[in-house]
Length: 438
Image (cartoon, rainbow, N blue to C red; front, side, top):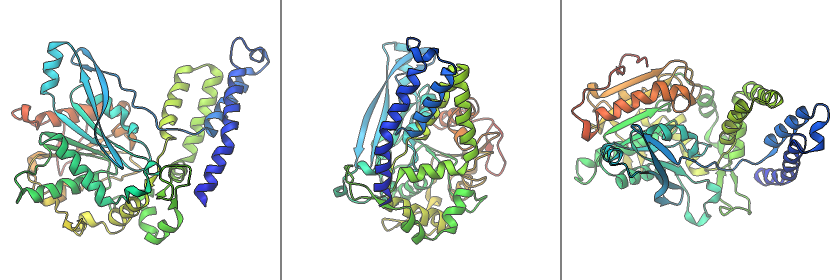
């Protein structure tokens, strides 16, 4: 019922949002007589803010059409490499006629970025992808809004997520480097662990050349955050009764049980209400002052932040139980489709974990816990990086990602890629057991 009420409210607000948008332009357009009235700039700014607060936010586009390889700008085309009911594997294919750049691109490592299925769309990692495209062939998981998946496609569990990741790794090939950001660190580690276990009896299986895990709840017991505490302190039944609803009939996934995106968005905002209130007030002031650059930065951030998707109920409830209540991965009790997850079976490749000093989603030590589980990887191929001054988003987006994190990720991947395996191990990264400083 709550979902239906939300859809009714959204439909009622749509005309108001359009009216606010039109009114904002009416008071700001240079040819409009209303633009000449006293305080017209304030009226325009107020209506613009009302429009943004009331409008519906759709999934943004990646919008990546070019990248720089060395000193050469190359074209980028987004392609669907593999499609499944709940996810598309996207490839950002680079094109150029420059022989030097083409030869350089052929030798560059291939990276699979596993984006979170935790409320926001994969476009949240746009900055991650843009940076990686300078030096890598890039694939990314693009998770489908569950309300758009017809009910006859069946349920989607956490175990299915693990299987999807394995299928994507197999599709790309044995020289792939995998980067997981936030939530997928757990299922990605499970997927690679199962591949490593099967390698003992199946010569056709392989594991990635490197694993880079960023800000994820490998062991949510360490430095628990507000997000962790909510998941740990409420019962499995409470989540099923209070946050799971059925998709209304106006979507392809009508009747499917989901954790609705609008509820997730409410939770995101509730974590830092003062910060969001201040941000919107600053946006209002920027519009009045005519600071177009700051206003546009606000729009770009909230166009992404406010665009949310529904998660399949089975997957969400499985994650709460497996990751945040039973801690099945670190306790060695997690079975995926009947197979025991054994991270200690991973003996090839290299591991890099990254944490932000100010991360309020995944606390200190949660991601680094992967080193204790992946003890089959030699110590000289396991690294950890702390990013001073970075929050959760700062480790994969923004200035700190571009200036502090990405250069170290690039060096780590290059040092363990087949074409560059003879290079020395990355510098500035600490071996596990010591806290790295970027």
